[in-house]
Length: 227
Image (cartoon, one colour):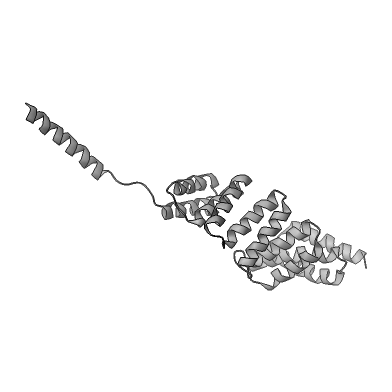
C-alpha cells in the first residue's frame, strides 16, 4: 500500500515537472523591451506604455544607460520633470560621458526655468562632444532668454557652422538664425541681424512656419524703424 502511494506521488510530481518544462517562456530580455519601447515612443507616441516597458527592463537589473535615457525622455514628453531628471541623472551615473543625457537634463532644467543648471549641462554636453551643433543652438537660446546676448551670439554663431546630429539641417539653421538675429538686434548690430533674419525667413518659408515668419517680419520692421 505504501509503495502504491509513493508511485502515485512520483507520477504526480513527474506530471507537474513536465508542465513546467513545456510551459513557454514569455518573458522578454532587456534589449527586446528597449526595442518595443522605442516603437511605442516614436511610432505610437504612447509614452505611458513605453515607460511601462522600460520600467520592466530596469526591474531586470540592467546597467544600460540608454534604458534610463529613454525612460527620462518619455517622462519629459509627459512633462513629469522630476522623474525625467531622476532617470537622466541615473544614465549619467552609469556613463559620465553621455552627452545626450546631459543635453536632456539641460532641457529639463530649462523647462523648470532653472537656467543656470541648463547652461551648465548644455556646456557639459558640448565639452563631451564639441561637434554637437544642436547644443550650441540650445545654449544660445538659453542665453537669449536670460538676456546674455554676447554669450548668445558666440554660441549661435558656432551652431550655424556645424552640422546637426539629430534634426534636419534646415530646421536647425532656421532656429539658430532667428535667435541669432534677435541677439544681434539686442546689441544694436542691425546689419548682422538683417542678414541672418533674411536667411531664417527663407528657411521658414520653405518649412511653412507662419508663426516664425510673422515674428521675423516684426524684427525686420523694427530694424528699419531704428535706421
